[in-house]
Image (cartoon, rainbow, N blue to C red):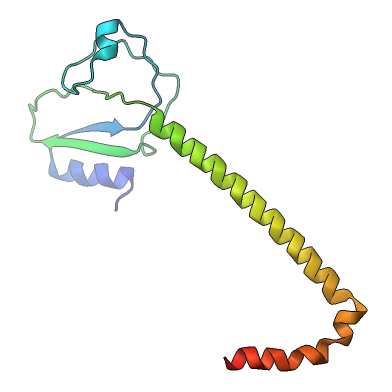
Length: 142
């Protein structure tokens, strides 16, 4: 795999014209009329003015698309596809649940570790150590 600059340099050595298009995922909010709101065929353009409030530097984009040729190439206009945010919300919900589960198990681990350290420090645990040795040998033999 090439980094951004290596890829562009390689293409510029071979082609007279290199046009770069950058693809990145954005969260979008749209204010539409009823017809555009109901439209979902994926082929009809929805006339909308797009403004951005977040930037990504070249080289940090999700995908880089290069259109190359020997000159006089057809014009390619920027395009966007808007989809629902349900998947992002579901992913965020699942991530939140996973973080809670991880925190729960980390807390349980810390408690068990503290209990084991306390138990190992007691006189009765130290005094019964020779009695536990045969059991350890039996477990290893299984």
